[in-house]
Length: 230
Image (cartoon, rainbow, N blue to C red; front, top):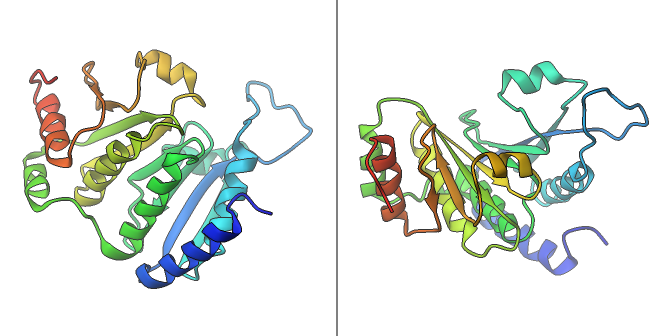
């Protein structure tokens, strides 16, 4: 039996068959198993499981593809695409955009986030509300949004999806899900004490909690403008 159960496998095949209309590539950066110890490289404890999950997932649709790069052996590729930690998964549509990224295993509630992002990139398109999309037109500079999550957080997917939809809507926005327990050094750096914890660009003021899409967009834009939010 694989990571994805038989019942879920059947349901996902049906969902992908009905809703995926264009190709989606999952670009995955991992660490291949090796007995050779590379100085300065910490073994990736979750890489094997993450790769197996993605392999099972892409087997469920002819519209899904998987590209795998070794973070050590193909370090130049990772560096070129701004990948500094693993496991990392980038969702890429036919437009070549790579602005939605998962750092850590998209397990638990975040597996749903991965599925929804795949369906939007390869089917329905961004589900961002028109007023939220219009608000993004005021962006003048690039912004990177990091949403710290844990697999058991039921509120985190909403925060991650909002960030991903912003990235899908605007070429000035990139977004990442960061699994806090897999990257504790980053969680400590950003003083993550609860999730979802959204870091907006270089702002020292995070957005704590999940909010309705419109309110989240307003808070993100306010933070970028240097205004105080909740």
